[in-house]
Length: 247
Image (cartoon, rainbow, N blue to C red):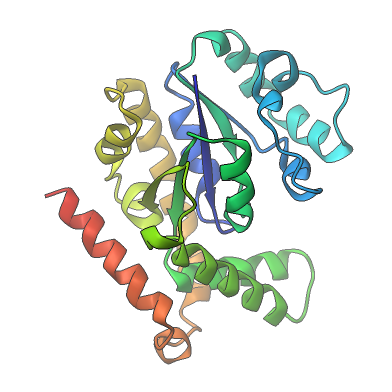
């Protein structure tokens, strides 16, 4: 069994990718129920991903129990196949901010980074601010963009900690266009599962329906606001490389 983690900025599509991969019976990705462990003195450890602990909520902090409860059907389904899975892990947005700790505690793990274009990252932060009743969204958007820049920085091999195996997925390419699944499965060393292709199609339909609201908000951010950041050039290079790998 190998540990597999999905991470990215908030609203980048980590949960959607989790849903897609969990259609494969060889993969069990949690719903982030250990996120409090990830942020409290980085107490995310391998024992949390053993069956006895993975499906037990009695010792959890409140936030973990809530996540488990709202995803009870997912965990019930995973329990039946957990011991035979090739990959076990979690979807943990923002865990890349503690990537050195992840490398220390989970040597040999595979990490899938979900990248979303910066305009939609800002728009999603704006939407979160509005939904939470905040009249001022600048703090949300500034924090979101700073996190996005940190994530893009990990695209350079020299910035990646040793001991982890990285793969980058473009939100737009996978979750809007339905492309990139073959490359992801090549990274995992598995033959694609037809059930995953069907799950991808269902998820892309849902994401496309939600995209218009984000696109309307994203239009307020001019290219000039962020186009001069070096991270933008790195992001564009990643886009070109991933598109080239598919040809």
